[in-house]
Length: 201
Figure (tube, rainbow, N blue to C red):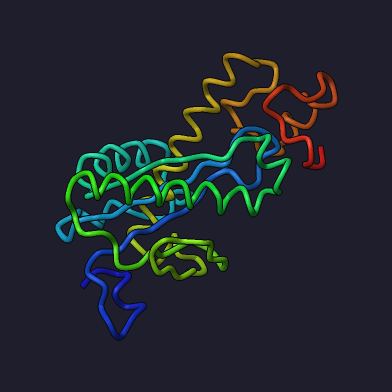
């Protein structure tokens, strides 16, 4: 039995989508989100909360998720959107965009749509399918674990590119999180075009 089915007694959902975000805490860059639907024969043992995996393990899992998932979609909400609607709402918006991407993909493939969306955290959002928030879902639900991995690896990839564009901030070392090095760079150079201006530096 798949891990997430233990969360429900009746009914047991056969097709489950999971969503999670990466990048709520950084001072710069977008927040990313992914939505994933996995097959029953997926190698679930490779999954975990993305924060508990090494970078090498995340990249290995990312490759397998993208090869084996019934559907996945990665979306984001920009630093400007974060400043305009706040990080919580921007995170929920990115997750909704990822879900919509999965629904479109599954319709295109003529696959039955997910019966429920499981969301990491304690907040639901306006969803075209039934949804349920799961606190610490990224350590309980396989689909959420997979989504956390895709969101994290995609965001890290983006921040590594931004490190080339704005090398003085060291985005490849901290991905925009408020490390001592990052704060010192901000004091020295001020914010760059991808910094979240509503966050406290």
